[in-house]
Amino acid sequence: MLNPGPTNVNESVRRAMLAPDMCHRDSEFADTLKRVCQKLIRVANGADRYDVVPFVASGTGVNEAMMSIVRGRMLALVAGRYSERLYLIAQRLRVDVIRLDFDPYQGIDVSRVAEVLAADSSISHFCLVHHETTTGVMAPLTALGELAALHNVQMFVDGVSSIGGHDFDLCRDNVAAATLSANKCLESLPGISFLYAKKTLLAESKGRSCSFYFDVYEQWQRCSSTGRPPFTAAIPLFFAAEVALDRLLVETVLGRARRYRGLKRYLEQGLQGLGYRLVPLPEGQSSNILTLAYLPVGCEYERLHSLLAQQGITIYTDEATLRKGIIFFATLGDMHEKDVDRFLVALSECTAASLQGQSAF
Ligand SMILES: *Cc1c(COP(=O)(O)O)cnc(C)c1O
Image 1 (tube, helix red, strand yellow):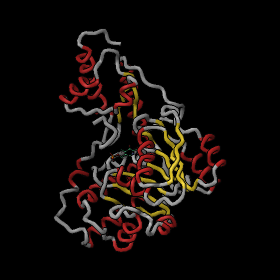
Image 2 (tube, protein in one colour; image 1 turned 180 degrees about the horizontal axis):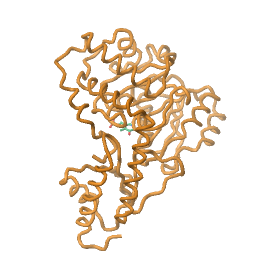
Image 3 (tube, protein in one colour; image 1 turned 180 degrees about the vertical axis):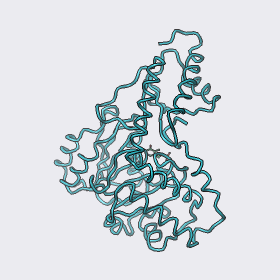
Image 4 (cartoon, helix red, strand yellow; image 1 turned 90 degrees about the vertical axis):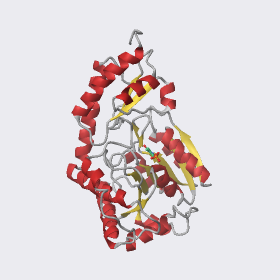
C-alpha cells in the first residue's frame, strides 16, 4: 500500500486482534485501555499535563469530537483538503468560525496568522492540520504555538497523519488539543482514534459537546477514571494498537521519522530514475511520508491504478491533486527499501503499459 493511510501493518499487530472474547467492561480491557493512553502520552510528550481520550471512529470522528468543545471564536487556517474539512466540521457544529486561506503548496504563513490574531481579540482558538496529507506540506507548529501563547488562544491540531512519524511535542509547542487515528504513522489498524488535550481543557469541557456519542467530557471521565468506556469499544483494535505502540516506542518517534525520511528519499531517487518529475515543496516543510510527482504526459491515472492493483499494489491520489496533473505516493507503515524496490519495478512496467505506445515524458 502506497496510499496515505490506512497503512501496512506488521503481522504482530494483526495477530494481536486474535485475543479471547471480552467485554469492554472487563478489568482486563480497562487495563489495556489505560496502558494504550499512557503510551500515547509518551509518544507525543504530554507529560502529566495532558490526557488522551479514545474514540471508536476514524480520524474525522475524533476531529468532530475536538471541534465540539470549542466555546468562543475559532479561526480555521485552511491550506488544503483536511483543513478545509476542519472548517466544514466547525460550521456544521455551529461553532463561530472564520477562515484564513493559504496556498496549499506553500502552506501556512505565520505572519498572516499573527496579523489576524492581533487585529481580532475575539478569536479564542485557531485550528490547523499539522501535515496536509494531499500536499505533503507541514505546518510551522512551533512558531504557531508561540503565537497561541502570545495571544492567549487555544491551538487545536489535526495530527492524524503526522503524530508518530514526525517531530511532535505537545508541551513544547503549547498544543491545547490534537487528534490522531490508529491507522497512519502509528502503524495500527483503522477504526479507533484519539484526542490529546490539556487536562485543564478537558475539565472545562463539561456539558459543551452538542453530540451524545462524541461527548468529550463524558468519554474522558469514564475512560480515565474507571477505564470503562460508555459505549461498546472496538476491543480487538485496542489490542492491536497496544502492540503497534510498543513497536513505536522501541523504534522511537525519531527513529521512525528517520526511516520514513530515508524511504521517501529512496523513492524520490527511484522515481527520477524512471523519468518522473518531482513536485518541489517549500524548503524544510515537506513531510516524511508523501512524495509528489507529475503524472507523465499521456499516462492515464485510472489505468495506472488498475495495472498496479493487479500486482497487489495500492496507490491513491485525490481528485483535486489529479486535476493539477500531480500524483502522490505515501511511504509509511511497516515498509522498507525492498518494498520500494518492488514498487518501482511494478511502476516502471505499469507506466510503460499505461502509455500504450505514446512517447513517455
Ligand atoms: C486521514 C486523515 C484524516 C481522517 O480521515 P478519515 O477518512 O476519517 O480516516 C484527517 N486528517 C488528516 C490530515 C488525515 O490525513
